[in-house]
Image (cartoon, rainbow, N blue to C red; front, side, top):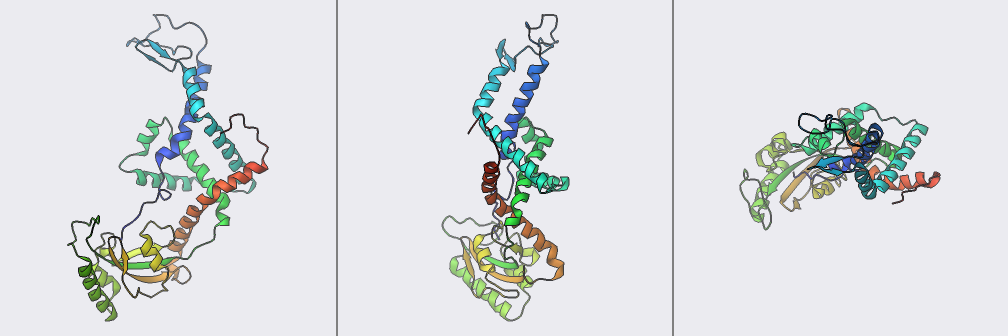
Length: 322
């Protein structure tokens, strides 16, 4: 099984930090202006051992070889490039917070922690700390951004209906071909050779052999072979091959694909173990988690229109329009 990493399935640290980082610059610059009293630059006696001013000179962002980069110029540049986006985002944030309060929606810290953990895994081997430092942002600010994202999902989740899901297993036999790269630990097969192997697979299954045992013997899928072909839950939007999902969703519990399902890198034989409508109690939590993942994926598409509705119902005077 080839897993597909969807942009919506994993968080991108740069995307999470862009607007917040610029907002941070504007916030810091405001506080720096307040902290630096007007007046002439510090006297020579008020310098550090390395020659740098002991007190930041007024309206100064940086000094390069004696040249001053003004903080007011940095602020103007930040406002020019991102000021309207930040304002628009802050308007949406306020409206979302107010609507969540009105509807008694509270995002627990545990949910934010889970999203931070997911982000850590998604960007590995890079680290969140490296990204935060690069974007001049704190972990608290990132968590606030994730909280806003989660709040927006929560506001529209009731508009997303559950979807049909299946718990399936699969046996993959690969074939070589033009622009098809296969793992080095499996021998190359032509299309005809792969079909011949699958014919033996189907004979074993028809003879009553356990699907998991047959998968361990024949499957050429690094993810599932040693687990007896275990794929997990397949549903629209899951990060596995869409051809596999499409075929699996047509089967009932206990059914096997009557013919191999061809994908770009091989053939699958798929067995459905259970469905979201018919499954044992010990799978309740797995299906519930998958349904939540699906509904949040779909919620992303509904949020922009929902925000338009909140804006339309609000009295807004935006002096920095997009």
